[in-house]
Length: 86
Image (cartoon, rainbow, N blue to C red; front, side, top):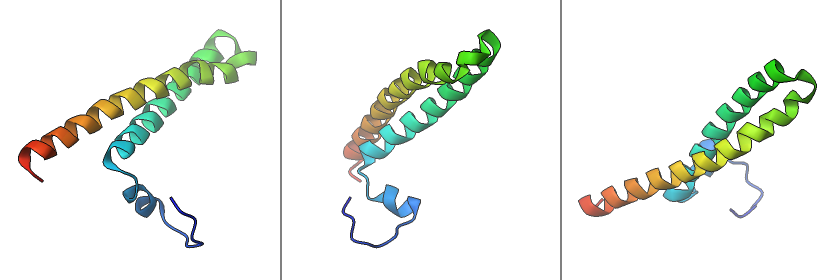
């Protein structure tokens, strides 16, 4: 994305990302956020002084898995659109 000095809203900025990238980004953000929250809860229950690190221990792998699932979903959508000609 080129910085031309014009402020854009999030929906407009997301609309400029290719379809596959949007699916990967959505999967990564959703799964990473859920993984981070779960990591915080687990970390607080197991050993509170290092709970912040558990956010990354569970959040980062969840984000990677979410990105891969988003990629698979995006490829599926692109394939269906290609088959149906839209």
